[in-house]
Image (tube, helix red, strand yellow):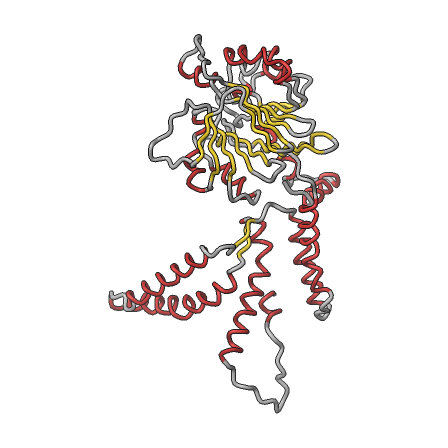
Length: 435
């Protein structure tokens, strides 16, 4: 449809003599066609792959003829010759042309600002885009109507730019593990733990239009929290790595230039928000624990606060670390707590929970996990607190607003199978939502 729209109408009336095509006309026509194809597929590419290529029209103009007129014809001829004679006739030419094409693609991909990262946006914008363009075509190509497909995207972009940026935390669904992405008020991106593989974290960062991690904090070295570190470091530039100073990393792992050991008392203040380190401290040692529990008890505990609300990330601290944290009293108070140890029976005792006094508790656990997490005992301790579970609701996003905390889950924006009018209305509403 978009390519057809780009094709010029020519006067083909009787007695009209067509002019011979000039090279400049061919270039203009080719550029017009590739622009039309790019615009026509851009909303789908942005929605599913979360990027927009700015250089693709030029790349297609150079590479498409090379592939279409040289690589494919020569490859077909060579294939037939191989079937008849056993000789791949133009193999060197096909290999050379293919190599040139790939080199051109790599060179153009490295051009600064060759593409733009696109955060997730509502599916309704895509539906409106194609419907509005169809209206434009059937209405006789009224140029005023040509603006209509683009207006919702422009409005959504302007709304996103003028909306105040508050502290936003997404607790990811990484199975039986932990990972959270924090969008700080100054526009920086912080990650706490990577999950066991890092794939879910990488997928979400791409989904959110993130190309860089400003701070990556690893609470402790157990694989369900730090197993995806190498995967993430290979795929995203990371400004700083924070940990408790007790993690051992493979020599082959390329760590960020800034590697910061944190301990109790460290405070990072950046205007509207503050990051406090509550645990561990230099002399802390878990004396009644085995090696596994000792690692948990040495977890980095971070409290991130903005205007009126605070988030507590407690790693996998167990009894000894909790006893050591108790005396901090009011410094523990937080509106949201990430429950340690996936909501296991000994995740957090009632005294520490009372000091934290959360209104929201998030439990990161795998669906139908073999450990039975979260335990009924822990859910009972958390009674009276709003509980969100990644094993039931998927990822959980909590945003600080002027009216309090806004909570959204994956289940809230996922289309659901339904046979009722109310259910269909809810699905229509979900089309207008994004993460």
